[in-house]
Image (spheres, rainbow, N blue to C red):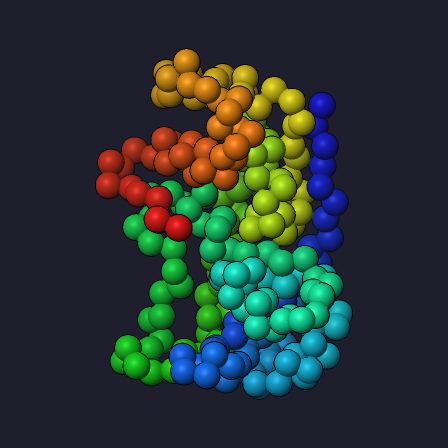
Length: 216
């Protein structure tokens, strides 16, 4: 009894917005489109024209940062794919999940939003490859826990994730036998803390005791 989320991943664009620390306004925008075209201006209206043929908007923390400034007071018609929240799920052994700004020579230099788009694209491709390398049952488990969370919906749609409506606690007990307490209240965790449960299960799969999930 699995259901598949619809998907069309042929056209996606990465977006990164630079916000002023003092005025909290958009100072720069970078975008990298599916056809290789690059956008680097501060105009939202010109960006929306650039995005016209895109099916997905992707970025690192795009849901709670970039989209908040780009679509303030207006609806966003594109599904959002956020690489930030998927990263601790698929790479729980990493010590942090921010984009590495290795193109900056000094800490007070302005970020280059186009470079950040390229890094976010590399990360998304790694996430997609990692997702498809997971056993099918584990992909179904994570998708079933996270399918209703806006931070994961776009990614799950993009990878054509399958999910189940019932039997999630039983699947967890089967996949994590000997790794978690068999008396844990998985029904409660599944219903009330599905995202936290998914991150915890991902962390249990690691072998490095120094692995830790970000506080957020």
